[in-house]
Image 1 (tube, rainbow, N blue to C red):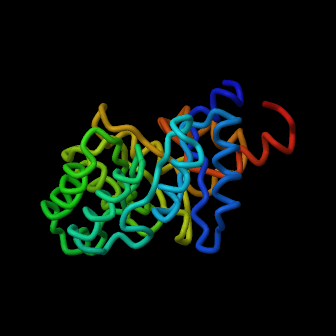
Image 2 (cartoon, rainbow, N blue to C red):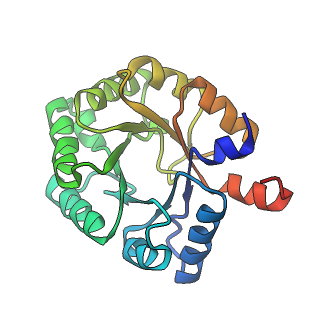
Length: 219
């Protein structure tokens, strides 16, 4: 697997709370240069990124980020504005209080309400694996599989842990075949990335791989 192959699976990500417009332009330029799957930015930067990059770049943003416990209505409004502003992919955070209360239908309804707003745009559901027991991870993989989402994603990158090899293998095992897997958080090397892909990850959320490619001049 070449570095170019791996980068084509990456959502080149910058979600720092103190990022600037200059940072946004830089990551857009990098995503275009290295042909990543998308650039993932905060909602505030979706419209500016679309104006800056035109149609040359797939723009991803986050919904209910990073906690996931905002109301369904609030998530839907975020999603509606994101799509209007030019986002093609949305990564929403699951409602973990609903999981703890075993309100499983509420989780499906929350996801499907956002999916109804974003329509044909790709929806990824972040389950924040580092906060879950193994049984809870399995439950969420099955619930996402019953929803209209396209992806289940490991992590926000804002908690105590990110993607692990064990979690990717588990998520692939317990998600329906049509559900794709996104690994995010802690992907530090191209070797890590290849391992995650071989274990079943279809997409990677990272900023480090482009940085490595730039440093090494390898792509």
